[in-house]
Image 1 (cartoon, one colour):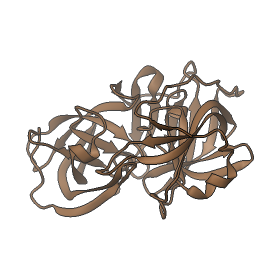
Image 2 (tube, rainbow, N blue to C red; image 1 turned 120 degrees about the vertical axis):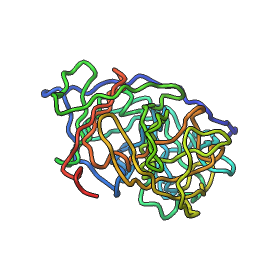
Image 3 (spheres, rainbow, N blue to C red; image 1 turned 60 degrees about the horizontal axis):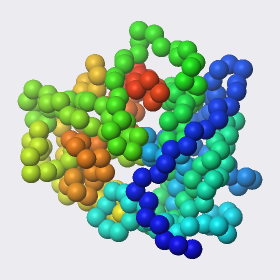
Image 4 (cartoon, one colour; image 1 turned 90 degrees about the vertical axis):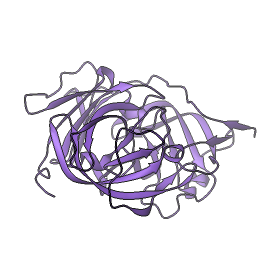
Length: 303
């Protein structure tokens, strides 16, 4: 097998599954603030796959090495997969094309990478996917009903005046960007350019650099923030006064702080918005029309 460094994966078009209602409904699985899905490759069922908006190509990375023996890797290519962290990229075995299913939807022409090391051993997820779903289906995450609804781009969405609309943009590798505002120490909110990393449980990760639009919180503690494909990420934890997303204001928000050289994989971002920012909302990610819809769910009034 030859070694191949992967920095940008080509995006493939996928076929849409026909449903009589114009949408496909799948039970929502959660791990705290994070959303999980179950993938099936052939007869092999792989549960607890993170649904990640920051995962920017058609495919799947499997963290759990126990699945190495259950897939046909006879024509696999060795690859390096960079990500957050200060170490070397993870190494894995890539097979392509592969078809897998998500609920009743078949996703053909996918790229599947199985990690060769136990970098993520002990994690509650077995892998990560994203663009295969977000990039081709309008994706509604309804925490009140505990379901994910997938709509084809031409379908009429169940949008009314209870939903707020936030513009999204796509700058690098198909990752969605939105503008939010933060007030760290009760100063007037400052507008930040952020990208959404839905695999991160943080509400927001403020990226530390020589010149920033914000000051850091007064009281912070050193902390292990998470693990990326290039190693562990260490930083600080503090509390900011406000996080403003569209018309909604969240107060006394726990924020992570990390060196941009270790955490950032989208040049120019002021911060990273994690799924922890969205637990109080039902969401609709509309990649085809560059919009994010959100409305408060039953958890909105909770601290």
